[in-house]
Length: 258
Figure (cartoon, helix red, strand yellow):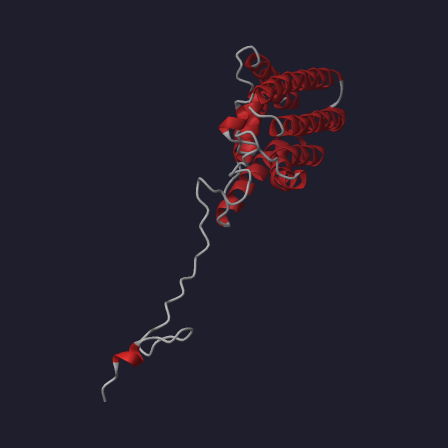
């Protein structure tokens, strides 16, 4: 059968016999790129009006859930284990119990395939050295004197970092919460970390003075509980001041062009 050329011509408003509808192309949603980030997170900083990089602090509850168990495991628990064993087993038993606690925690994490926090590794090294020296001198005072002297050195490190314009508080903060370089270079942020380094230098100096006085003037039991409470309260106050100050700094920086 022959189809006439007239039949091939489309009538107005109707497609011709041999015409096919054009394919419909569906656009795919664009993937986020470096030029068009999806959302602003701690790893992907937001861009604030004015062209500079802002930064949003993670929720306090989230940071505490991350840091508190490690702090308890690596700092608080060895002290509690030492004193409990000291009251029941004496000095040598307390030294063994503290070492077993720390290394048992490391072995348990390895057995379960979990990573070992750096704080726990530092605790293992510190407890080992302290236990060896205390066992050699047969003195519980030596066991607690070493971390106190270490606290004094930390205070001096915080203080020395200020005139060097390399605030130690900034280094520790970025270890816990990654921050963009553009944010850290802001003048107000630099000033904040310098002041906070001075604050923590004072906190650690106060910690060392309280510890030394109580260590040589009070019993070990009084030293452990009273000194620990005072130092914990002092540290908590400093943490609160640091967080509030940082939030205030963020408010100014994120609302002001660099």
